[in-house]
Length: 595
Image (cartoon, rainbow, N blue to C red; front, side):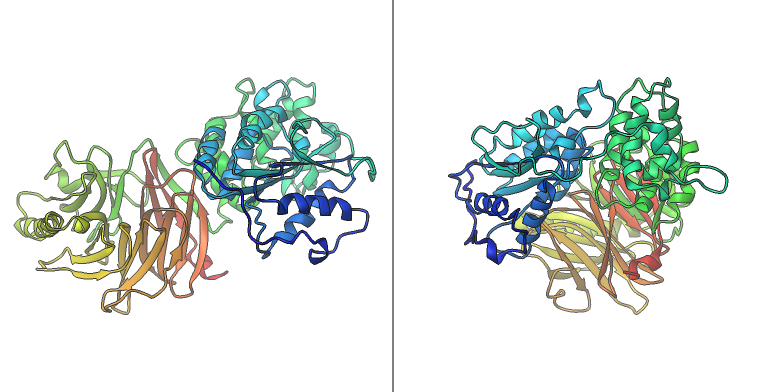
């Protein structure tokens, strides 16, 4: 794929940019000239060099501030690299570019396919690296070799990289902005572990209070512990302290736990690995880190779960239970069964699960109406605890009903036959999505390739559905909810990244999308809660957005794994399913409108 390195009309006149001191002004002009030359003729790498305290980081911060709302120069990602490894650097860069946290190999694949001319800023590359000194995975050179150098071979990628006085990247064919040796105060050397620990305040029961520790201590103390010669006791003290797991350097913890030689309590290594891509995000505060780590521990490490729960419960969402290993392709709450959720796996087997504990509550209909072995459900719409409409991976609707319920067979069979006949008559009418309305709204919502949405009653026979052409592209997910005001709100997503709202009593959907992003929606769920209707939207970049319909406010809940299926109860219990398991998260609903 060929990419043209072009930018819009760009001025390199430094007088139009934010103020800069006279000493740094020539360096700012040189950096600006490099960035403004976006036609592909100049170097694609700019090295920012200089001694400690010479103003390298301030120069990059000035440049980044000047690009805000300025046409022609767009910085697509800024990744401060101090303490990062190749893996944690790739996670953060993937997040900022909109792919979600990816491994270095998958990140390079995505950037290769990206059609945008990309401009990256990489402050503090010379301070990258963390973890055991003898492991190459935590070395700065590994980050350069596995991520930065391959990125810079791509013709549509440009980067300004701060390298200090190191030789981490070759200056051949690169622009060099060298601030020289006019350094300020030298940076403090690496402090020993006892000195760093002495700077940590203690609680009334004489435990380290990591929430009050200086930021520099939290960032560097684990590396200092690794250097200490005490047979690992200091490292063990940190890894067994839940407060440090929540407040310490996530990048350093990730690199340290990669070393299988270091003993860890319980299943911490497995739990941390599950949550690490999100724990290392710059936007993640301590409360969210506690909630994320607690979520990864639930169902895997009971002791760690117990230790983390008080910290996790301070956040606006908290994991309640998990069923690791339970592969889930489809989820739906069951009408008439207030505390049951129906889950289906890739083999087509639907089973009921208890909402309070996640325990199995038996097969659909007590075992009656088992699906054929060839059914591979993508989504489901239950009529009750015995009958369900399934959307198969063959793009067909399939009713699953017990032999002793002819009414269910007629209702669900008619819906499947209606859409099957429409697809035969016109290819654009082929079903592309199926959703349900939850326990209080016994409806099926069918989306098709033309962008139309069709709402069917599951409780009684309808000759034709209530239909509306909602999208311009194929529908990828759908759901609906009935409100206390008697309205039926239908939400649907399309392959163009739009999410739309249609109130079924009206002839037209809401004129503007609820959300419009460059990613795909992987699942939708909605519920009428005590604070009003709430919509949950899972996206392909690993984010889950919760939209409070009445206020229009959105909160973001990070996902530990790609989400394939969602359900949401009126009480704010959010169920998330994927091929690796099913877990439940309790939302604090009042927080959805406290933004």
